[in-house]
Image (tube, rainbow, N blue to C red):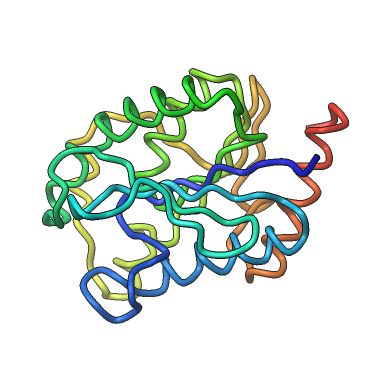
Length: 200
Protein backbone atom coordinates (compact mmCIF):
# COMPACT_ATOMS: atom_id res chain seq x y z
CA UNK A 1 0.00 0.00 0.00
CA UNK A 2 1.38 3.49 -0.84
CA UNK A 3 2.75 5.60 1.96
CA UNK A 4 0.98 8.73 3.21
CA UNK A 5 2.47 12.18 3.65
CA UNK A 6 0.89 14.91 5.80
CA UNK A 7 1.69 18.31 4.32
CA UNK A 8 1.17 21.19 6.75
CA UNK A 9 0.39 24.56 5.20
CA UNK A 10 -1.20 26.49 8.05
CA UNK A 11 -1.43 29.95 6.54
CA UNK A 12 -2.00 29.39 2.84
CA UNK A 13 -4.14 26.87 1.00
CA UNK A 14 -3.12 25.07 -2.19
CA UNK A 15 -6.70 25.73 -3.31
CA UNK A 16 -6.20 29.52 -3.20
CA UNK A 17 -6.08 31.31 -6.52
CA UNK A 18 -2.52 32.59 -7.08
CA UNK A 19 -2.38 36.38 -6.94
CA UNK A 20 -5.46 36.78 -4.74
CA UNK A 21 -5.24 37.49 -1.02
CA UNK A 22 -2.26 35.57 0.37
CA UNK A 23 -2.20 33.19 -2.60
CA UNK A 24 1.23 33.19 -4.21
CA UNK A 25 4.26 31.02 -4.77
CA UNK A 26 3.96 28.89 -1.66
CA UNK A 27 0.47 27.55 -2.31
CA UNK A 28 1.47 26.75 -5.91
CA UNK A 29 4.56 24.95 -4.57
CA UNK A 30 2.56 22.93 -2.03
CA UNK A 31 0.03 21.87 -4.68
CA UNK A 32 2.79 20.96 -7.14
CA UNK A 33 4.71 18.86 -4.61
CA UNK A 34 1.54 17.02 -3.58
CA UNK A 35 0.58 16.35 -7.21
CA UNK A 36 4.08 15.11 -8.11
CA UNK A 37 4.26 12.81 -5.09
CA UNK A 38 0.79 11.44 -5.76
CA UNK A 39 1.83 10.57 -9.32
CA UNK A 40 4.77 8.68 -7.76
CA UNK A 41 2.36 6.66 -5.60
CA UNK A 42 2.54 8.65 -2.34
CA UNK A 43 -0.86 9.73 -1.03
CA UNK A 44 -0.78 13.33 0.18
CA UNK A 45 -3.06 14.98 2.72
CA UNK A 46 -2.59 18.74 2.88
CA UNK A 47 -3.74 20.44 6.09
CA UNK A 48 -4.51 24.16 5.99
CA UNK A 49 -6.36 26.51 8.34
CA UNK A 50 -9.99 26.98 7.36
CA UNK A 51 -10.78 30.56 6.37
CA UNK A 52 -14.48 30.10 5.68
CA UNK A 53 -17.36 28.49 7.59
CA UNK A 54 -18.56 27.15 4.22
CA UNK A 55 -15.28 25.35 3.48
CA UNK A 56 -15.86 21.59 3.29
CA UNK A 57 -13.78 19.59 5.78
CA UNK A 58 -12.02 17.68 2.98
CA UNK A 59 -11.59 18.43 -0.72
CA UNK A 60 -10.22 15.82 -3.13
CA UNK A 61 -8.22 17.80 -5.66
CA UNK A 62 -6.87 14.88 -7.67
CA UNK A 63 -5.91 11.22 -7.45
CA UNK A 64 -4.06 10.76 -4.16
CA UNK A 65 -4.31 14.41 -3.06
CA UNK A 66 -6.75 15.77 -0.48
CA UNK A 67 -6.91 19.16 1.21
CA UNK A 68 -8.22 19.25 4.79
CA UNK A 69 -9.62 22.49 6.20
CA UNK A 70 -8.60 22.62 9.86
CA UNK A 71 -10.71 24.80 12.16
CA UNK A 72 -8.21 26.80 14.21
CA UNK A 73 -9.34 30.20 15.39
CA UNK A 74 -11.87 32.22 13.41
CA UNK A 75 -13.00 30.68 10.12
CA UNK A 76 -12.06 33.78 8.19
CA UNK A 77 -8.87 35.38 6.92
CA UNK A 78 -6.80 36.97 9.70
CA UNK A 79 -3.90 39.44 9.52
CA UNK A 80 -0.47 37.81 9.29
CA UNK A 81 0.45 39.36 12.62
CA UNK A 82 -2.21 37.22 14.33
CA UNK A 83 -1.20 33.92 12.75
CA UNK A 84 1.35 32.94 15.45
CA UNK A 85 -1.50 32.91 17.98
CA UNK A 86 -3.22 30.25 15.86
CA UNK A 87 -0.35 27.74 15.80
CA UNK A 88 -1.47 26.17 19.11
CA UNK A 89 -5.16 25.77 18.07
CA UNK A 90 -4.00 24.39 14.71
CA UNK A 91 -1.67 21.91 16.44
CA UNK A 92 -4.38 20.75 18.86
CA UNK A 93 -6.89 20.31 16.05
CA UNK A 94 -4.32 18.30 14.08
CA UNK A 95 -3.55 16.10 17.08
CA UNK A 96 -7.24 15.33 17.58
CA UNK A 97 -7.77 14.64 13.88
CA UNK A 98 -4.78 12.32 13.54
CA UNK A 99 -5.51 10.49 16.81
CA UNK A 100 -9.02 9.73 15.61
CA UNK A 101 -8.16 8.95 11.99
CA UNK A 102 -6.95 5.40 12.56
CA UNK A 103 -4.12 5.92 10.04
CA UNK A 104 -1.02 8.01 10.63
CA UNK A 105 1.13 9.45 7.85
CA UNK A 106 4.66 8.20 7.25
CA UNK A 107 6.00 11.70 7.93
CA UNK A 108 5.13 15.39 8.19
CA UNK A 109 6.20 18.08 5.72
CA UNK A 110 5.81 21.55 7.25
CA UNK A 111 5.79 24.61 5.01
CA UNK A 112 6.91 27.96 6.47
CA UNK A 113 7.87 28.49 10.10
CA UNK A 114 4.27 28.63 11.36
CA UNK A 115 3.63 25.09 10.13
CA UNK A 116 7.07 24.15 11.45
CA UNK A 117 5.97 25.03 14.98
CA UNK A 118 2.93 22.76 14.62
CA UNK A 119 4.95 20.07 12.87
CA UNK A 120 7.56 20.00 15.62
CA UNK A 121 4.88 19.34 18.24
CA UNK A 122 3.19 16.70 16.06
CA UNK A 123 6.50 14.97 15.40
CA UNK A 124 7.00 14.45 19.12
CA UNK A 125 3.37 13.59 19.81
CA UNK A 126 3.27 10.81 17.23
CA UNK A 127 6.95 9.84 16.94
CA UNK A 128 7.14 10.56 13.21
CA UNK A 129 9.81 12.23 11.06
CA UNK A 130 9.46 15.90 10.12
CA UNK A 131 10.69 17.76 7.04
CA UNK A 132 10.49 21.56 7.07
CA UNK A 133 10.66 23.94 4.13
CA UNK A 134 10.92 27.55 5.25
CA UNK A 135 10.28 29.22 1.85
CA UNK A 136 11.48 32.58 3.24
CA UNK A 137 13.91 33.48 6.01
CA UNK A 138 14.18 36.84 7.75
CA UNK A 139 17.94 37.09 7.19
CA UNK A 140 17.66 36.39 3.46
CA UNK A 141 14.81 38.90 3.12
CA UNK A 142 16.77 41.51 5.04
CA UNK A 143 19.87 40.99 2.89
CA UNK A 144 17.71 41.35 -0.22
CA UNK A 145 16.04 44.47 1.19
CA UNK A 146 12.62 42.83 1.08
CA UNK A 147 11.97 43.26 4.79
CA UNK A 148 10.31 40.96 7.28
CA UNK A 149 9.15 41.11 10.87
CA UNK A 150 11.79 39.30 12.96
CA UNK A 151 10.26 40.76 16.14
CA UNK A 152 7.12 38.77 15.40
CA UNK A 153 9.12 35.54 15.37
CA UNK A 154 11.07 36.54 18.47
CA UNK A 155 7.84 37.07 20.40
CA UNK A 156 6.61 33.56 19.60
CA UNK A 157 8.36 31.05 21.88
CA UNK A 158 9.45 28.05 19.86
CA UNK A 159 12.29 25.66 19.28
CA UNK A 160 13.75 26.10 15.79
CA UNK A 161 12.84 23.38 13.32
CA UNK A 162 15.30 22.89 10.47
CA UNK A 163 15.77 20.07 7.99
CA UNK A 164 14.72 16.52 8.79
CA UNK A 165 14.28 15.31 12.35
CA UNK A 166 13.61 11.82 13.63
CA UNK A 167 14.36 10.87 17.20
CA UNK A 168 17.79 12.28 17.97
CA UNK A 169 18.91 12.37 14.35
CA UNK A 170 19.12 15.57 12.36
CA UNK A 171 19.89 16.47 8.77
CA UNK A 172 21.32 19.94 8.18
CA UNK A 173 19.48 22.41 5.93
CA UNK A 174 22.04 21.99 3.17
CA UNK A 175 21.19 18.31 2.98
CA UNK A 176 17.48 18.93 2.61
CA UNK A 177 17.68 22.37 1.00
CA UNK A 178 15.20 24.23 -1.14
CA UNK A 179 14.98 22.49 -4.47
CA UNK A 180 12.74 22.37 -7.46
CA UNK A 181 9.57 20.35 -7.20
CA UNK A 182 11.03 17.40 -9.09
CA UNK A 183 14.09 17.28 -6.81
CA UNK A 184 11.93 17.64 -3.69
CA UNK A 185 9.71 14.79 -4.87
CA UNK A 186 12.78 12.60 -5.43
CA UNK A 187 14.03 13.40 -1.93
CA UNK A 188 10.67 12.61 -0.32
CA UNK A 189 10.47 9.37 -2.27
CA UNK A 190 13.87 8.29 -0.94
CA UNK A 191 12.97 9.37 2.60
CA UNK A 192 9.67 7.51 2.51
CA UNK A 193 11.31 4.39 1.10
CA UNK A 194 14.09 4.61 3.69
CA UNK A 195 11.52 5.03 6.48
CA UNK A 196 9.65 1.96 5.21
CA UNK A 197 12.88 -0.06 5.26
CA UNK A 198 13.93 1.28 8.66
CA UNK A 199 16.83 3.32 7.25
CA UNK A 200 15.56 6.86 7.92
